Amino acid sequence: MVVPGEPTTAPVRRVAPGAVRWLLLALLPLLAALLYERGQHYDPSLLDFKSGGSRMTAFLPEQVENWQRLATIRLFDKANLYEYIDGHAEYFLSAGFRALTVAEYRLPTDTQQPSAVVDLYDMGEPLNAFGVLMDEIGVGGQPVAVGDVGFQAPRSLGFVAGQYYVKLAAFADNLSLLVVAQAVHQAILKGAGQSLGKASLNLLFPDLGMVTTTRFIKENYHGWSFLQRVAERRFQRADGTAILAFSVSVTPQQRSDLERNFLSFMQQEGTGVTETKVEGMRILQVSDRYEGDWIVLPLDTVWLGIFHPLDEEMRPALKAFAHHE
Image (cartoon, rainbow, N blue to C red; front, side, top):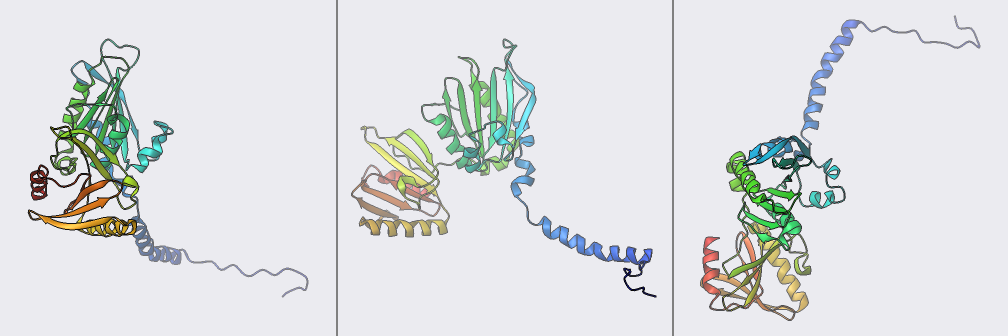
């Protein structure tokens, strides 16, 4: 009986324990399907343990001649890189950074501090590693025989081995970092195996003379938005003539897009471009009011530009280069 003015309550219905169990069992397939679908969306860099810092520890020998590696190994990833290079982490992240392993080495004569620090960066691709090397040590550094390419300064040494950028810093003058660098390089070759060979740095240039400088330009080469990730190299001929060349690694589709953008830009600028065939090579000859006469070789895997008119001395080198590609 309901009394006016008094609150009413609905009777409580009890569910049998067996029904609850059947309901939960029915939900299990749905939950499993949901978890599977969510698992298909992930950041590969978070799960790529093979390229992580822990794997790279094997690339740092425990002892190299009189150099002894200290016990503490520090590992960094995208999330905590700023803890090691605060203020410079964004540069590495934008350059393709994946992981960093840091080790300290000590000589018997140093008892208070490490003699040197080795930073081993996984930059994802050889060209990324090369770009960082050139930015950090290449300018003003002296070429050194280690890795794919290496440079040495008074208290530092850097080199590239495939996708890895290795930087060594000494805490005193006249320390031979090269012996440690070579040992690290050999450990990388041994540990990375065939994968390193497939990812070796290959700067695609013909033999145009003695190499004087090499640079990496990440974007907007010469102010051209369509030229990204460019390797630039200066050569000097025996007669003293300087030649500047650049190359971009491309797929056939990228080459087609690049050529279309290049020709469109030159047309808008009123710059003449003439296509010719030289010994089976397709060559674009450019008459530029800013750069003078220069040429482009649009090959299947590389877009090669040379800021110099085609001449007889250049032809054999270009033919050999095009045949190799």
